[in-house]
Image (cartoon, rainbow, N blue to C red):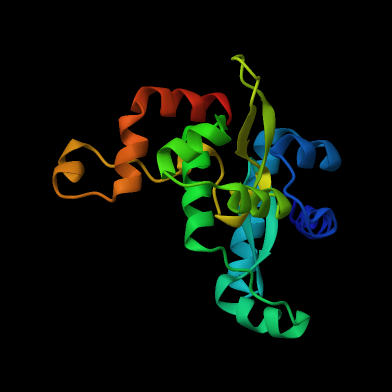
Length: 198
């Protein structure tokens, strides 16, 4: 194992900020992907062994250096960052988009039963969702879907990592109304849309 490449990978990931794919890292190192993956695994072990304040994580289809979760409270104080919390209605809107994407504003409002202008504007502002084109129906309404920022924020590698919707037994036990509405909109279509947007 070429351990001299570990600080190279660490420096490259630190400088990149955003996740880098395995192929991008391999190109930078001039190595094949199998050997690069071994080096990434070694770097992850190395960071844990030396009790580093950062960790290597596979998110949004790539590799990124992140602050260890238990240390974020200190980093937040240092940076004087105010915690951004989403309201319950905005989180509900985001959940519907995540599972049903691509989806129109009208379809989301049909599920939620209320208007969603403010929630939609907030999610667009903080880049958790984006426009994914227009639906081929009368009026050609905008379709919305989640972004790579959404994946990184929730620690997901892809949309396939989203928690599963409730099954029939869970529905019988009293799943939440919003979850039931999403489920009733055809689980097959949900899964197909998720897979098409990974």
